[in-house]
Amino acid sequence: LRENLKDMIQTSEDRESCEELQDCSSRLFDIKSDLGLLAEQPYDDHVYWVERSATGAAISFHAAPIFLAPYLKKILFGNRTSVVLASATLSTIGEKASDKVNPQSAGDEIDPTQWMRREAGKSGLSYVARRVGAEACDAIQLGSPFNYPEQMKVIVASNMPDPRANGFREAMAEALKKYIQLSDGRALVLFTNYKLMREMAEELADFLQSHGWTLFTQSSRTPRTLLMEQFKAETHSVLFGTESFWQGVDAPGETLSNVIITRLPFSVPDHPVVSSQIEWIESRGGNAFMDYTIPEAILKFRQGIGRLIRTATDTGTVVILDSRIIQKRYGRMFLDALPECDVVVEK
Image (cartoon, rainbow, N blue to C red):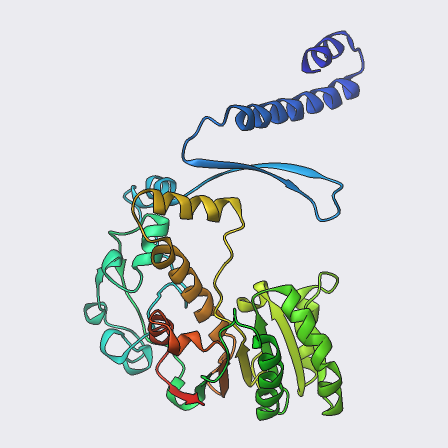
């Protein structure tokens, strides 16, 4: 097809037509290159897959590196330039008094000589550092500007069944009623899958309405920003969300006084990149659950917790309905990821 276009471009006398045909030829070259890449699959450190759209009307081809660390190390961290990575949830370990610098207690400016410096690969930042190829970078974990012991309390519902056990769905419905009443609405309920979220929304709709609490539920038809605006506009309301609502949403003030985490956010390895990463770790004798699944879940867990306190005057409660956080050995790692605050285990 490109060869035919070349002939048409050479014989055409219309400049505008030539430019349009040249543009088509360039696009065809890109398509040819992409198809060749997918057909040959020349890179062993890549994963290749095909996706069908939700409507089934379109099919797309994809290729991606299994791990980005080698590329980022070469592009960013292998050069003699300064690179700063900053986030409230880069660490898989919560900020403790013994290993942080608190900006509030350091005056207007922080003395660099007082910063706790260590290699990122030897700190709570080690997981993210490995993921991005920055193991040798200096790691600095600063204290939060928020007074978590005074502003936040965590409640763990220890009597909940295991999320994989029969009866968990029914127990969750009752627990949601109990803990939403605790804050008179004003709650963000975080789910890990759409199906359970929709089921809980249907089951609790009449209960919430009877208390005068408007229920907002994440859906594909309502943009996240609009949903958050509606939630913030009604003080005594409840928002059910999943996936994208664990991070990046902001509802400071009285509107959000209760974040309820229905399950620890373990990811399902159904994405080709994720499943390839797990396969790669296990093929080299690693423990994919401890080396990948747990750290990823902890980071998302910390992001969900972070939806509650957004300003120095916010107060509220985080409720965890997944009893594995105290019943499983790995649960201690999630508890250690919490900021310093009161943790109450309810039986």
